[in-house]
Image (cartoon, rainbow, N blue to C red; front, side, top):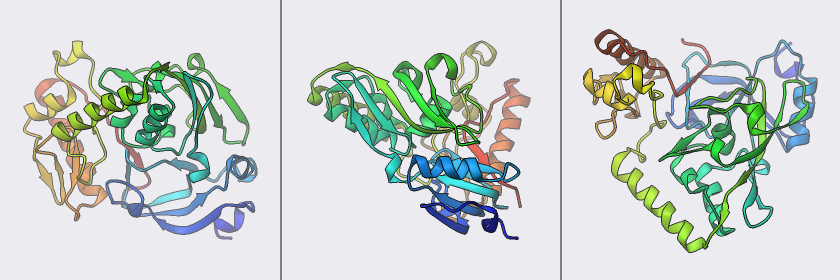
Length: 304
């Protein structure tokens, strides 16, 4: 029996052999065996509850922080639909945001509602679900700093409401089980004039445009920043620079000339090109600087 024949009936949509290169920012990778677009939270919960436990289930947000490997992804890749992308102000300082909403749109929704404190999201690529999973942040603020509670479904379709203590967010880390799929969260800021909030967001956007290759086929930061004590105070991009990583190429993959911690696909790269380049630079940093860098980009699927 084919995989799709083992899956439960849903109100959303299944697609076999779905091209992940079309929906990930690096534009590489083989197909998902099955891609599932759930109609809503109840549809996703039923799918999780009734899908046999031996079938792998993965979640993909905007694909901004994911390297889909050339060999494709076995099992089901879940991608949340627009029904998970709503923003609802709850009062003058709290807002409920769906996990599929792009981070920059979440920042704009908060600004429109006069809720300050979420401006940093305008500088974070990806969706709120991804921000929850990796405690995304920039310019001194992280997701954990504004989180009240998050809603997730576990592999058995059970709905969980988790507070910050249960998620135990740390730098680019979340303690939630890997099989949780976040569906929404409540964030808390402070009241402020929408015009003032928007002005601060514009400053963040301008700074990113000056320092990061945001118009390229990229995925944001490739490596997590290492501990300052072990790295001699150097950040990831400085270590990449130190070993000659800036501008280095493998096939159609390179590290950006503009920001040495950003991967670039010139349009001809394979996932193998990208992964090989990153591993080369990571090994050089370890050999020459004694610092072990760790991937911030998530790798999904099988190498070809």
